[in-house]
Length: 201
Image (tube, rainbow, N blue to C red; front, side, top):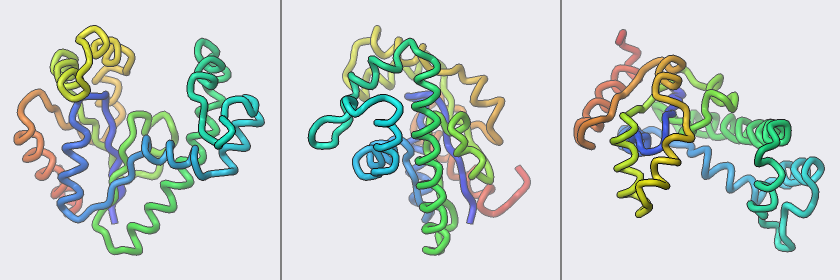
């Protein structure tokens, strides 16, 4: 089984690539979804966060008070690094479990979907990594259409992320997505087929 890491900035088209792999019989692990699940059910992670940031970051029902946590880590690089160290470690452990599960199910591949794939340590779990990139103007338009937000807010979201070149320099392959969804789907299917067949690319 092949572990494929898929990363890139918001609005570039990662979801389309993930859906192609799903259609090919692969499993998908969404790290953002995992993070929110772990916040709800992983008592060990919750206790580590409380020990570092105080019990006040969770409400009486055990839900994370995002604004309270944000107020602590915003502008405090050390606190942010501590937060990432805790959450990334638990996410990587859960990814290892999901990879083993996908292998036991006989899946041809599992994709790890994460904007912070390379920074979190999850990249070391991957056999190959794919950067899905697109020009900033294209991404801004997609984010606006997808989320119904203003151009100013969409642009601030895009500006806050690392540039395409950062992802492209650190991944095994790049899928450029400045065209149509159909073109990306065709390119993704061709690349993923070659990866799964272990062809020279």
